[in-house]
Length: 241
Image (cartoon, rainbow, N blue to C red; front, side, top):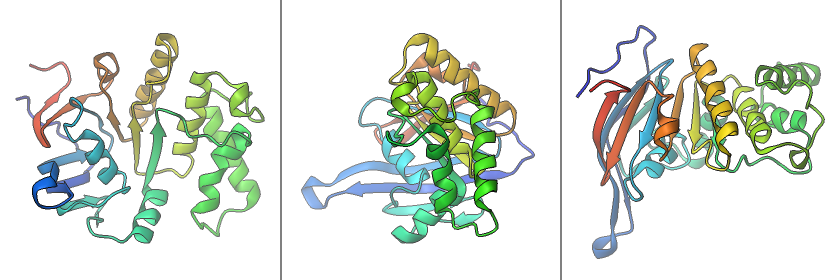
């Protein structure tokens, strides 16, 4: 196995002996069986594995969408393993930006309003409406959509919709971007554009954890974690044997 990447930026994600069990007794499903994982600030990692390997479960726990059965998960210095639903929602909004395969944009809202929404939910009383608007515009400009502010999702291509989703993920300046099959609904050209954009964000210091089944997409990550049967089968620097 390749050596773990060394970073001076500090550990952002520290997961220890993480388990997740669904159901009880004879019907219990052990989705995660004792996962240990560290991710440094500024890393770009891809989580891969076959269906049923536990990658979606791990992504949901990293994204504070679910809690582990046992083990610990420390995110940016805060142990979030056993927080209740309301506390987890607060962590998600402050520290995590999501990019989904299906974009999850609100169809009746413009690109600008879709990107502004997270700023309305974070309860930051120090931001005025104009400051929220300016930050949302800046996020859209950073993904190359400064000329599409007032377009609704149905007026945008799939690649442009995913760019809006990335801008929305960035607007709260989160500690981490979680990308779940970010190119799954895109053609080859749009997929390459989105991955180039994520690579640019990584070069700017954004931490990215991506779930993907696509070897072409995983090439953009600097580190690849393979899951199998709820355990990490390998954790290697990309391109290193």
